[in-house]
Amino acid sequence: MTDDVLVVHGGTPLEGRIRVRGAKNLVSKAMVAALLGDSPSRLFDVPRIRDVEVVRGLLGLHGVKVTDGAEDGELVFDPANVESASTDQINVHAGSSRIPILFCGPLLHRLGHAFIPDLGGCHIGPRPIDFHLQALREFGATVDKTPEGLHLSAPNGLHGTKFALPYPSVGATEQVLLTAVMAEGVTELRNAAVEPEIIDLICILQKMGAIIKVHTDRVIEIQGVPKLHGYTHRPIPDRIEAASWAAAALATRGHVEVLGAQQADMMTFLNIFRSVGGEYEVTDARPPKLGDPGQEGGIRFWHPGGELNAVALETGVHPGFMTDWQQPLVVALTQARGLSIVHETVYEQRLGYTEALNTMGANIQVYRDCLGGTPCRFGRRNFKHSAVIAGPSKLHAADLVIPDLRAGFSHLIAALAAEGTSRVYGVDLINRGYEDFEAKLADLGAHTERP
Image: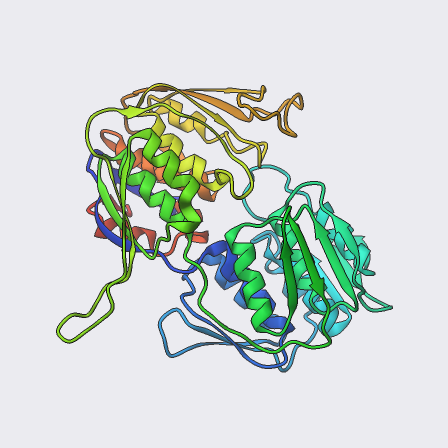
């Protein structure tokens, strides 16, 4: 672990400009969608993150030729020779990502069978795949569980179905979309997730020839088609990364412009950011003209000085406050005067990172009760899913071990905001979702180094 550590000299405000690329939670799914086409697909603005490399490797194992395009961040996918991959080859990726489960529908359509290894991802709760498997069975798939993973087949093909999710799971909604688009007949999905990344995936599938209707009240209707072609697409920017840098600006009393950030997909975050006392300005794109190279639009975030305000917030599915936003923001809330309350309703074990913040001087108590206006599915189930943050607290340096991706970035923000020098272990985990984060830290004036 000694080569997986970042030394952070804290106490310096982050100042400057960085850029976010395509959303991590969309790009990997768009790559899987390329399996469904009968012609090549082109995806732009792809971030250089570990999840992308995992999916690229899995696509290659299944015969999809993946090449770099002419533009920086462009990938080209040629699915002309989709084939089965050996269990041993696929198992090389076991535990490294949760994306493989989404290969099921496309592989069943292309090959008639699929193998999915043990799933990894961040340890923030079980995130069971029961929703996925139940949906696949509804389409007519047969699922055999073995010690090495899941073997799926569709002896009678896949057929449209009516299906209601017990919870608007993003992953299960993606599973249904990727399976239903070429299933025979009509599929109706109720209680679907409608996150911006879901809508962008629907846009991609529609470009490929799919027929998908998004109705009100979380109902999505998909009319199966016999074949799909490739797509050309530029994904929405990563709203999680944008909010993470915004929280870092607030916690360090800095000023960060995030090029590529879009107001529409971040409205709920922006409301809370302003309520806490942060300031932001949406900057419009400036097209290039003679003598002026132009500039991409984005959002500038800064700490205006003075005290921050305590707030009460609950995470939730879109259009609620995104669960991935709360961990970075909580670091800034340790600097707000009064008691802030965070009620986590999406993942039951997402508050474990607060222990590390407390060792740095924060005052955070976690509770099993639902400390919010909405009772949630974790209430009375012995999960510590609510937090009370008392502030302001003077943060000091500490040795930190990163438990998961988003907690890792919150630990990094805390180290940047704290007085003294911290050592952050397991920092390479941040590469799963944040492209070139060390270079971006340098661009913002942070003092960090590898020992």
